[in-house]
Image (cartoon, rainbow, N blue to C red; front, side):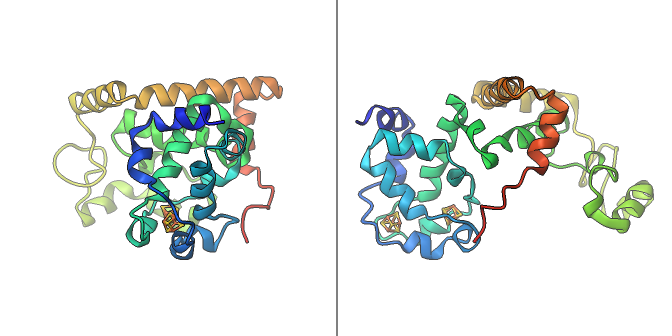
Length: 230
Ligand code: SF4
Ligand code: SF4
């Protein structure tokens, strides 16, 4: 008992985020995610604090740790000064490192986030850019978006944007040197290593389930067991 807990504790954030939880449930009462999901940050803190490896491993392999929206409302209300949202961040990091995230539906979606938001940051300097919100892949954007994308060059200057231009303004092209700097920051801070771990574990999982990567991506975008929300 405790070896897995010790591993989690190597992450300095855990010591700062969890200090003698008294299981009062205030964090769950304030948590917006608990309004929608079968989700209880108090229970997560109780499991981590128990140092019970079997229970912690179950948690790491479950959808539960992916329901948190990282809003940190829990931090503002905890009478013990705990931050359940950071405890969950620590669990997520470990689940990604160990490959546990592929064992559940919400965790597998990490690959979609890494391939979209994650790679956009490295390649474009933006989490989201209109060029990747294509009409064919995002029908939920509706006809206004289709019109907008057809007229983006003429419309964007009206709100001060610099679409595929340089200089100050939203959605401007980011200079090569700045992109190199962003990439270097992600390399030295471990961000790229995390991306690699997500990719490798996802590819292994897809292979084991005889899914070519394009089918796997489709699978994680559309899979919905319907068991997540209240
Ligand atoms: S509010 Fe703080 S003390 Fe209360 S259950 Fe949540 S983490 Fe524990
Ligand atoms: S950070 Fe997560 S656990 Fe905390 S209140 Fe927000 S959604 Fe809930």
